[in-house]
Length: 158
Ligand code: 6OG
Image 1 (cartoon, rainbow, N blue to C red):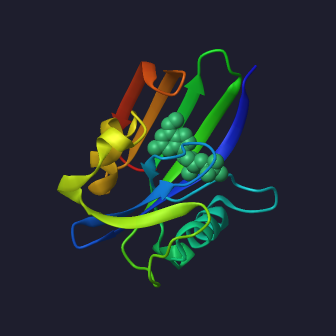
Image 2 (cartoon, rainbow, N blue to C red):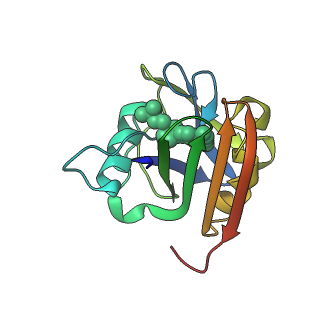
């Protein structure tokens, strides 16, 4: 039996640029990614998405401006944990992206995304996210640097 944990992952977009953060500690350290983390007990997925974005980048977004575009499932060889990650985008937000204890934020042009310094799975689904297309994908990793199996499909809606 697997153990499922729910996570959020938020990407802000503006004028052909996307805000990424370089993770300074913990899971995915030294990788560029969106902003997110575990959904707490007694918290909705949307509340967690807003909270994690603020904690990690100081950016503010209204719940109604978050668009759930993707659903990712990650499993790791020899591990019962399944990470269930809900991916959101937003084009309306407030604040100035600021370094926090967890992340160094930086705006990247869509054509300059640093895939070689990101999770391997990102290059499979980023184009869907950047184009606000709905998608569902599963990735089975061996360690953190090899994908043994993956599946991705575009959806009509979430
Ligand atoms: P914290 O440990 O910071 O939450 N995440 C992944 N993101 C990508 N792009 N690829 C993966 O491949 C990922 N695994 C986890 C979900 C971890 C954050 O990292 C995301 C969360 O936003 C394995 O609380």
